[in-house]
Image (cartoon, rainbow, N blue to C red; front, side):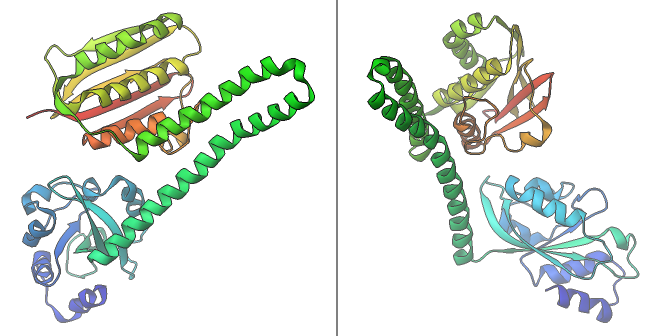
Length: 360
């Protein structure tokens, strides 16, 4: 594909770069360009509508990265950033692009550097040729993705369960040799069994989610219900909840119980992060077409290099945690077409910000 395009440089007398795009848009599924302004699209062929559902005007002026799946964004950004524009080799990426209906489509994107001698800003222009991935290849990609997650989960489960099982085995041996301490050992063993049961319960929720029950809910009401449930723990920790709520009612279409689960988990994490008395600041506001909840603690903070790992199976910064609660929280918000953003500064605190689309 790239060879064909570069061959056109020698045979076409091109004075307008869009003439080339029009030719190639009739041959390939979709053509877009990467401009000098941080990947902003300034041309999109008409046939993009049949693939992604957008009109060209809806994509123009936006960055190509805004349509990429979060897991693919980093890979293509690093590769493009490190590619010299005078380089003659084209780049091929297999990535997921977000369609207008919110679903993702596996695509192959060929990145071609434009080197026409008579095109202004030649060293800053790139062409993207987007093709839909064949069904069989898409199924293989999805299967590989699932296997990678399963492998990661299996390794985490083995690690998390091995520790309490090793303790149980050791205490059984001690009980056989010293029966006078059986009662003491039994209490510790019971705690270890509870750890295994807790992991099993959380894994069951991940493996077999409960049916969704979406309805219109007021975010502030949901949060206040969570505060009622956590009142005792908040009092015990001597933490003050500072509320900063929008004056207007913020309504979202959501599964109330699942959102409560997320908020309780994040507030508990904030409480655990604080070594002594302090404040947890909760802001509920409207930002564009999203309802936003931010939970800010005054805890120990999270090193910047660990933030990207949050939400991964069995990754946790807590000595007695397993990371599954946060993993489920990310999953639930994703099911609501929302996002969780994290900002943190060691020694200062952490802010978790949830954004969920508002009900139209």
